[in-house]
Image (cartoon, rainbow, N blue to C red; front, side, top):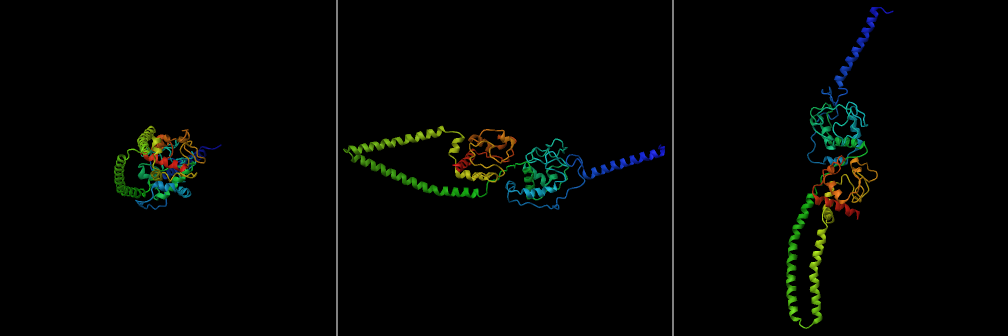
Length: 373
């Protein structure tokens, strides 16, 4: 039997151990912000050192765009950069750590992981984690979303950000498409075309004057010939036949114009497309799509695209927004898709803003059709 003093000592020791345990837990939470690295109201007690040394490296104002860098991103290098994020994030679906899991983060709604306690700062500045939004956040989390409790100092080098975003994008088996701005050399090409047109105008005027002169000469010659011919019946018959043929030519032209007017709408624009202009405009798509070889890049190849079944390229992992559409890429659907991809198929991962000019869309599609012929 234990006496009262012994029992009191045992109970006191147990209570003391429990108190030390609770105190240690509280200290650990204050130091490391466990369980709330992104969602608690208080900030973390330390900042993760990314190795950049806090250098304020100003990126060049001129250089490759984010979309161009993203199209050539090094996924293996991005996986190495992700080593700075592993302590707080996992790429496996549903595996939350101090921060939420990053499976399918690219294209995912902000603060979309249901069982994670986010801070309100993120949802106030963005709605979807596009590659561009992730780039801004990773460069300077505190500056991008003031009030966020994430203690990451940021990645100052754009190449590191591009590579790690591409790595995260690749983990779900598909890649997001970005639009690459048209190459700058298009402007000189347009200027050259303008100069050529200007040079051709005087030549066209000279040709018009020569034609007018020849027509006047022919009219005088025909009048003289008509006055001289009075009794040669066969020659008169030939002249009459020529006059009838000349009268039929305007009628044939009118018939052609009527047939052209019957063909209306976007299909008519594609039929009359400027293939050279379409090839130039296609440069906006070249970083993500191959037009003449069955080779997939960030997006699927575009060989025989017109009248091809939607989401039908073998080996490419389409988003559900496209696979659920069904049907084929006819001219009208292609036009609507190129005009506004987000509106045509809400929820797809393609970040291309679209081509608002209808004639430019027709030229691009006409160019793609010409490669299939």
